[in-house]
Image 1 (cartoon, rainbow, N blue to C red):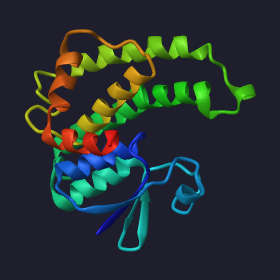
Image 2: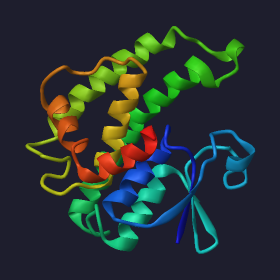
Image 3: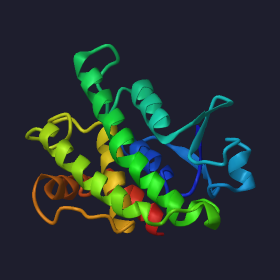
Amino acid sequence: MYQLIGTPTNRTFRVMWAMAEMELEYTQIQASPGSDAAREFNPSGKVPALVVEGQTIIDSVAIMQFLADKHGKITFPAGSIERAQQDSFTQLLNDDLDAILWCAARHSFILPKEKRVPEVKETLNWEFTRNLGILEKRMGDGPYLMGEKFTVPDIVLTHCLGWARVAKFDLPSEGPIKDYIRRTIARPAYIAANALRTG
């Protein structure tokens, strides 16, 4: 059985959702970021981590893609053109959305107070909005990023959009992005994972 380390109020939720999509069983250690429990599995203290056959995998995207490949779900096969396009979406989201949100978080509450530059959030918000506009042009007719098939980057994007809302970033009130998130959060696996997050 898989062992997942992390709490559902951060990127650990991505893995919880992915595992719900794949109907995988796991146990969970509720380790907060930066805690001693988290550092037992990742020296940086970041979560999530996944223990598989005595080995530890870190980083939410790496964990989700490993599980997707291993179980042949929510992914296209490695070596296919579709997989290259899927991976391209994943990298785009990591670079152009997740990285911006993480930078905003660091300058809001993660870095030591004397190292924070709160004024940077305005620029990050602008960049995030610009990047969403670029993403819309790549999204196609949907319903998901890769068309009819729900894949790993859909989890990353939906999580980033939820994170952006909590961080008070500007999100479209209508249009493709709004329609997209309505579809993804209506998935039964999302609802099941979110129930674990909200208790």
